[in-house]
Length: 456
Image (cartoon, rainbow, N blue to C red):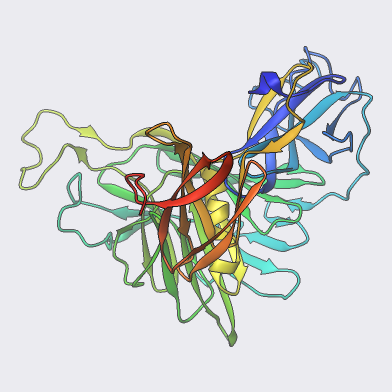
């Protein structure tokens, strides 16, 4: 498809693709190819498809190279891309440069982007304060956030008959070093190194301009047995309610410490301690960790477990000559914490969780002519409660099949736009609806179907 987009102009183009059914606005990291030329030395900059300057910040590359000697840089910038579509950005020497913005604030134990202020414990690296700068609201409970706990776990590989990991906490990772990694107008971050015995856990804690999200990148090298590792977040409420992501919706579960499955996010909300009329919460988003528990106001994501494999009770441990152990060695994953005032449904939690798992995708293109415009959208869904969960060719070849869901469980209505035509849709609370989009007598039609793609 990119070969058909008109990318003519100086330098090279970036086509940003958005797989979501609604417009995506967020931060993108991208390494532009400059033929080894120095980005800073030759005056490269970034513009959108209209030639307007786009603010960006240079951050560490993935490669262990020294800037500017090797000409490789990594950009972070804020982009907006239409629903189920693409948009063109461009980089080259001599393009317009965005007006400078003031730097965010960072020290080895604090981060401040003007909207939230974070403070880390200087001994453990845990987050002990997350303050909303506009309202003075404190989201962190007394037991802290990002607390890396190691629990005794003598259960078998599948934890049969174990309702939850309530064993004693054997220890917590302790801080070795905390240092500022990024300090610029769009992004500030701290790298935190923590250890427990022979195991090491490195995190990069990131805040960005005009964002309430706390991005936590994780690199864990684990060496342990008969243990479970959890990451704990205590939300500052005396009457917590826990909500978990499930397929096509969400469910409420008791805050009783039971180990339960979750998908892309979990949330704990309730009245703020000392201010019962003010509702607060925090959502924990992930890109691949699907076990968790909530005990009171503390939500804990299960990071790893290290029983023997495949150990099944009533095996008598020790009769084998050797054992293999689960979750040994290196792994990496991404989390995001989203503190919010009010109801989680109004805080964009579901949309943000999908964006972590299905981000905007950059594709580098050389400059060439084409018959497609510099930005376009195939399909768009409006309505804060509607979520597009599938778009595919119909099995019989007649048009496309679209599946929508009410993601907040309170009923949803909005508009589906397809090839310049708008269709009004309405879903009942927690409903999943399937439609066929096809041409009938030369016009696009949206028709209700069942999940077998047959008319209802």
